[in-house]
Amino acid sequence: MADVAQPQAKLPSTIPYIIGNEGCERFNFYGMRNILTPFLVGSLLLYLPEGQRVLAAKDVFHTFVIGVYFFPLLGGWLADRHFGKYPTIFWLSLVYCLGNALLALFPHNVTGFYAGLLLIALGSGGIKPLVASFVGDQFDATNKHRAKGVFDAFYWIINFGSFFASLLMPMALRSFGPSVAFGIPGVLMAIATFVFWLGRKQYVRVPPAAPSPHSFLRVVRTALGSHAEGHSNLGSFVAGVGLALGLGTFLFVGRLGFVACFCLALVLILGFGGWGTARQLERAKGAHPDEAIEGVRSVLRILILFALTTPFWSLFDQKASTWILQANLMQRPEWFLPAQMQALNPALVMVLIPFNSFVTWPLLKRWFRYEPTSLARMGAGIAFSGLAWVVIGVLQVAVERGPVPIAWQMLPYVFLTLGEVLVSATGLEFAYSQAPPSMKGTIMSFFYLSVTIGNLWVLLMNASVKSPAVTARMVQAGVSVTAFQMFFFAGFAFLAALAFAAYAKRYTLVDHYRNG
Image (cartoon, rainbow, N blue to C red):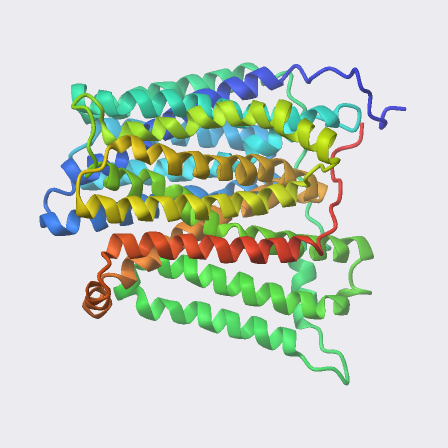
């Protein structure tokens, strides 16, 4: 039968085009991203007083990352509801290329450079959930058992591109200047777009979902807007409170900035609105079919898991900001640049993914008869990230007391990368498999939105330590602001890992792969 798994089924012929595209695109993205912080501190932000440049560079970097992982919502909506995945990926890739061109052309012009960052955030973010879900679309029930290996290969090629970008682009920035250093990744993005275009006649293209009176938002609106006689409207009230609190965050724009306030408002609206919807979801029965209501219920449950991964992302993305700034203070050979330490992360990923696939998981299954679920792996990954930040915090204390060789940073990189493999690579396949067919791009974009929220926590922490009262309290305690932040984020991750494990025990896995 066409919808029965076939052990000897071949990989889809379109996979090499998507994998090749991803490798070039990731070289571009990580090439420009990993030199962004040192470039900002050493060049673009020189107009600021020296003491303000580090925090300003971190704010710009994490604001950019927030944009990159927010725009997947737009890309997912365009693909799922209007154009389909292939056209959306292709046209947003061209926007992406234009953003790269602006970075190379205006490295010393704040307006031109920031416009380039905005276009890259729009292009990179817009295609991000779609490329991963486009991989999943190439499979059906006959060969879905091979999808896990391809998602691992997909993540492996991401890190292949990232490794060479992290190694070479800091050298290009030092030797040839910012125009060349930002221009080379742009050329790779143009190649990525061309490679993706080459496969245009062979791709499996799942058409966008037709407008439905039973869509996710319509079911939510019905649930929150319905009144049941004899029952309280607590869910609607809670959703209203979330909306009011979200709008209220903009009163703090002067202190937190627009981006942080906007993201915080989104968190409050999604959090309170989701809880309120879940409480009153049964009221949508009759107005919507049972499968539509159950689809909303499953999405809300998935979003809780995604929310619990946000602390991981707040730790992970700081390796390109906080960890580079620490590396600047450590002993290293004259030829070695601090930003090049980031090459260790993708190098470890390329080793750990096949090692786990061919050694760790088979041995656990054979010796202990234990096969960890995707959720068990993700929870462990969050805990490993917390361990990495305990180590990085200890190193910070040591650096502030005397010289420390940069080689010591290898240890936290190992723990953080192990956490990344368990959370991110596993999460890509998890998000696709759990998403109802009409919401593949949207659910993948919510997975990436968790990265946005993770970077929001960094912006809020940076804003809090700007308070003289808070800084004075840390000085009295004998700990620097940087070290305090590091230990705070470690504890944040450990608490998230515990909460994730507790919720995962009650989560029932589903299978939403396409039938043959």
